[in-house]
Structure formats: structure tokens, C-alpha cells
Image 1 (tube, rainbow, N blue to C red):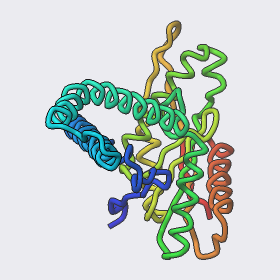
Image 2 (cartoon, helix red, strand yellow):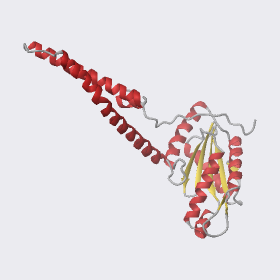
Image 3 (cartoon, helix red, strand yellow):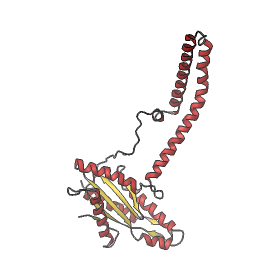
Image 4 (spheres, one colour):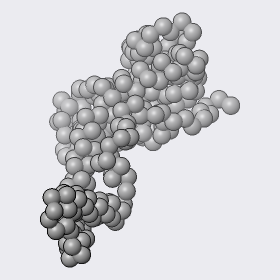
Length: 269
């Protein structure tokens, strides 16, 4: 059926491995589980210290560990460890939050909240290699906001920013979870459509174009700003030997639209 695209899932190649590190294992546990692990470990370490002391003292003919020593060595970590572990768990969570924020900022366009160009290129390279290897469909849509420079010139950059945010939101409404949307540069956006052929991608492109056409931005001064967009679509073909080729085809289709009236979609030949 034309326009139907089965849901697919892209594995994030930058997902960190969690195997082999104690700190990463702790991250997968709840707060109570973390505190229990740390407290239990503290008690066991205390017992090991007492045991070593007892063996060394006995070997040199001194008095070994007494019952009182064992009681103190057990109670002390049981009292102190929960407090220390609570602080340690808090620090771990703060570190994890900071790490997640840093990673998010490194792959995200700050203004629109969609992916940036660098992350898109990493994703599309992975998907292109998979599509070529397994002979899967894959398409790319390039979108350019029509007359965006005049929006900035007439209404200011704040209005231009509102247009960019609004357009990115309209595009996202038309995509699956596995599709990758990114700001490609300036007023250009780009979309990766895994397992989607050219005709299916054109259906998506037209849906996006129509959604963008409904967008109106209200500037601080002046009338509402009507927004339209031009879209170029390219699909992987048997003779598509490199990723640069499909991107070039999409860009050529976009140029064709921009020179023939704008507010249209075109599929690369």
C-alpha cells in the first residue's frame, strides 16, 4: 500500500557499554539496592581487615581479634556506610545527569531541540551501510524554509528563531520514532527515512510540506508570518555507491523545487 512504512528501530551506535565496571553496574540498580550493595561491601571489607589482623596477631603470639572487635567491626560499617553510600549515590546521580546532559548537548541543535548535523551524519552513515549490505530501502528528505532571509530582515532574528522552532515541530509530527530529523544548517533541515523507498518518502515529504504550510508565526510587531517550505527527496538505488551521492541527489531535487516556484516537493531522478 502506497505511503505505508513499517516501523523500524535504529540502534544508537554511541550507546555506552555497561559491562565490566562496578560503577556502571551500580547505575542499573535502584537507590536502595545501591545503598545495600555499598553497605554490605563495607561490612565484608571490615571483616576481611579484622580477619587479616587476627591471623597476623596470632602468628606473632599476640591476642587476636576478640568478640568485641568483631561486633564493633560489624556495627560501625552498618551505621556509617548508609550515610556515606547515600552521599556516594547522590554524587553518582549528579555525575550521570551531567554526562547525559553533555551528550545531549553534543548531538542536539540548541535552538530547535532536534539533532545536529554531526549526529545526523553518524546515523545516516550507519543506516546507509546497512541498506547497501542488506539491499534495504532508504530515503533522505532535504527541506529549505522558503524566503527565510526576508523573515529575518523584516521581522528580526527572534521571529526567525520562532519559525525554525515551529517548522522543526511540524516536521517531527510527520515522522516515526526511527526516522532521524536534524537541522542541517541555517534554514535547512534533513530527514533520514530508514526502510522507505522514494515513493513512500514523497508521501512523507508532501505531508510535511502541508503541515508546514499551516504554520503561522506571530512576531512582536507586524502581521502573522505565513511559512512554506521546499523539499527535495532522494532514495538509495542500485547505482548509489556512496552516501554523498544520495545527499547530492536530494540537494539537486531541492534546488529544482526552489527554481520552479518553491512550496513543492520533488523526487530526484
